Image (cartoon, rainbow, N blue to C red; front, side, top):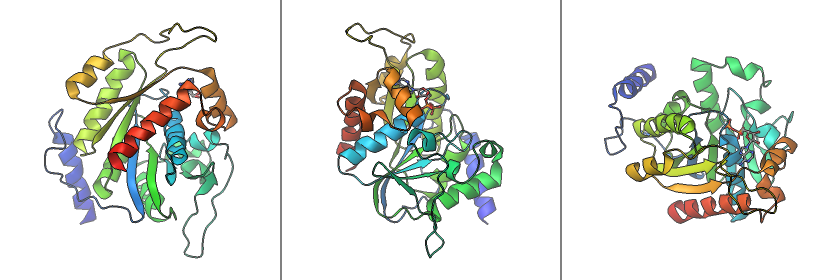
Length: 284
Ligand code: ADP
């Protein structure tokens, strides 16, 4: 029966008209996850645009505003969150109910496939194993009470978003892109994917938006501005922030100390803080 439901959901997705939206009846029956107020999906379309960086720093910005926050690295093809928060090679504990205990780091509850399998093994996770893994992340992890669970999706794929949207009530999705049209082309697919699985669009984060050399106010476009703003206007999707390119962001990721943790007053941290404020204003 569950298999038939799954097939029917896949067919719904496959034959949904392009651009179909959440106004249509939701064929799924998503349920809230007890104890978790808001599940936020962070997607991108393209890899390498800063989706994990945004997930980590947004989670910290929400925590800095007094929220209880979990961070789930669902990027099973390239789990980078353990490295970004300085938790490589840590193994989650297990409680007496056989639930996995998230790693506590910087005040966040963190879980990643990278804690459970070797980084190189994660690549071969497919189909049923992948769905089982996602299910376990939600039901076999002792998340406790959270205001926000930030979920870093793998790039591009609809599989995981579909699995989640079928089962769990999601507060909304954020899409990360860089300014140029090459990234936008894939980000549009992520918009369609969220629409097709009835996930509300919370907005875009434009990452690596520009670069300012030290001591200069001139904004240099590392990537050419494409049609992102016009697209967002036409679709009535918000741009939540423009995050500049700053080598300190990537240095922080390499070192396992995210910029929101190490440089509270940087332009980048303030931009993440404003995204957190917008989410709190909308979702509480
Ligand atoms: P994705 O999750 O989309 O694959 P990542 O978050 O892993 O992307 O980011 C890709 C690389 O770009 C990482 O090395 C990261 O540190 C770097 N990066 C992301 N955002 C910025 C930024 N605003 N400034 C500088 N480097 C960044």
